[in-house]
Image (cartoon, rainbow, N blue to C red; front, side):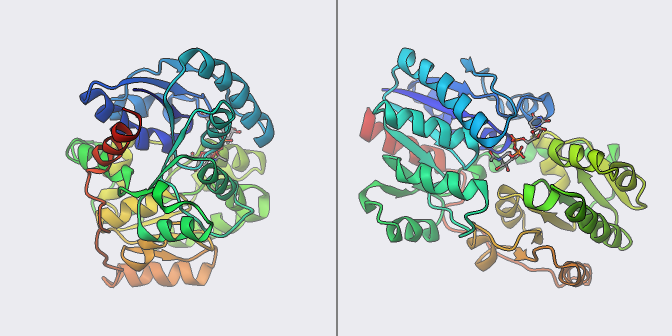
Length: 363
Ligand code: UD1
């Protein structure tokens, strides 16, 4: 069998790494294709280096553009390669524009699509990722899910249960494989931080960072949090350019207690999160990683597509509610942060389970 694996944006790299490694270990023929949705070294290359992902065989170099253009460009260029590579299946991961674009191009060529991290739903159709999730799932031949809520969502939407395989959380394979190396990172010294004495913030969702009012709101909240403990903010390029555009970058950089850094690599960021007291984020993956680290996570969104991180893990949904965010921070600082447990099958063995199914189906 010949498997074509697709990556495009930062969260994809963490999910594809263990699958590529497992396919290689079993001697399966594979092609790795990067759409180029993320292209800065700090958004892309550093993850290949940290995670030991081989150089992509194909790089479409698509880059940034409005959604329709980005999705369309990926489809057009991916389609050309699909014809020459002729894979037995295309593996897509997560919920970014590249995920949907390649899935759609593949299914139109009657190449089976395999979706890893299927079935997640937050119910908010204004989020681009929610559209990408729903559509990718509905055109996929095999759907690999991380949790039983995802299975339920897919069944409720009428997807044949015979195509759904609960294999666990693929990101945790990477996390467990690289944790020891991450702990050797010197990121705390570089940023002059003390273990368990700071908060980490990530913020990049368009609904949180696009527009002056939204950014101003979060600047004010982060300023207040930074009065209680140091706050490290590795700033996403989208957030940086919005802050710059609205004249807020300098204000952020000059806020006492707030440390604004460039985006960090996988190992440095894992070390930073592992040693932190609180994580505040609008990322999806970080909600899951903090659950496994046992670090309290405050999710700066009104909902989550990963409810198991709330019911079983350390995640609390706080949205943009200033009072709630500050109250939760106080609770954590007082030693009453949420303690959770690691969900079933988030055990670092998800990639072998996926490749077992692929081998049975396409081998
Ligand atoms: C994308 C994903 C999002 C994911 C995020 C992780 C979609 C719809 N969104 O959002 O789900 O959580 O990646 O980072 O696919 N930029 C750079 N350098 C880069 C990449 C982007 O400067 O290497 C800047 C550009 O100004 C670009 C903007 O970031 O316009 C947004 O990039 P884009 O890929 O469209 O979406 P993200 O916000 O990164």
